[in-house]
Image (cartoon, rainbow, N blue to C red):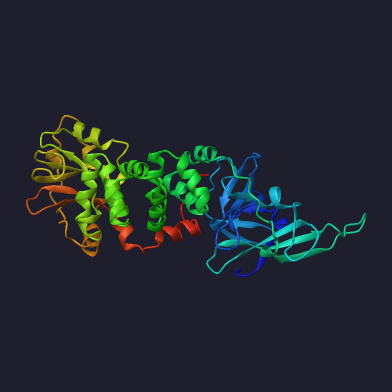
Length: 420
């Protein structure tokens, strides 16, 4: 289907079918979003009306095929009610019948229809616009319709931007990866306005999901005090990776303004190469004393600030319990703790097969370690067997995937659309 165009008016009202042949609903509109760099506006998805008259969003990448009779989809349908988001436009509701100008032509035109096409990368984008010449319209005479490329419409994209605080209120309902996608799609001026209105914790979580160059751009746009506050909210390993990308003078200014404990954690990671276990680890895993009970361990693991990977394994160490700790004794899995009585000692169900990593282990060695032991989290100890931190499998994936994987993911909308 690459290269062929489909006019939106022809798919409006078509049934949307799943792969088993059951009708899910009817197509009511198409959602598009503008892009920078003179790229064609991207098709984000379809507005589908269910039989209960509820309109939902369905991501375009899950559309299997479109023909003259039906739209066939795959995957799970999220029935959350649809609403338009920042920089999104509904083709039928907002573009059809709108008055526009055609480049290098006099007079005004009306948008009669819009065509989309699938690219070689299997994304969909706006391709052509059918224009009706208003000047030639006469009673009882059908106006002439001309099909032109989307770039010929001078004022095709007219956005009515909402106040930044309204955008932030909507972003608060999304997952960090989806907030990152919204920031990624904004032009620099608009992104700066929205970032200014976001709270530090929300911005920190979104930054962790952005490509490195965009992380740096956002941090550079902030004053030093705000940048320090945001980095304090990030996981220490992510904050260290970001600070390492800044100019030394700016990095030091930010570290000086961070809370001493947060700055110490970040500085402790900056001494390691980013592509080693030491550079990948977080210095804040779940750490237990030898006399901690199962109940104590589960209470620590329930901390909502822990990622799922960090919460799956606790490490038992001699005091002190802040990293670097006293001697590392062993690790205990949350699944095992859940099967034991609360009063039992957590140390009694340690996994003796967990061999700690050294901070100098490179990414290849760490990757093989996770594949061999089938773990989500692993301890890192120094030559005195003091626990320095823990590496999680998502930290490893960040480094073994291509350097631009976050940008590609955001551009192609491979993040799940359950946010809808």
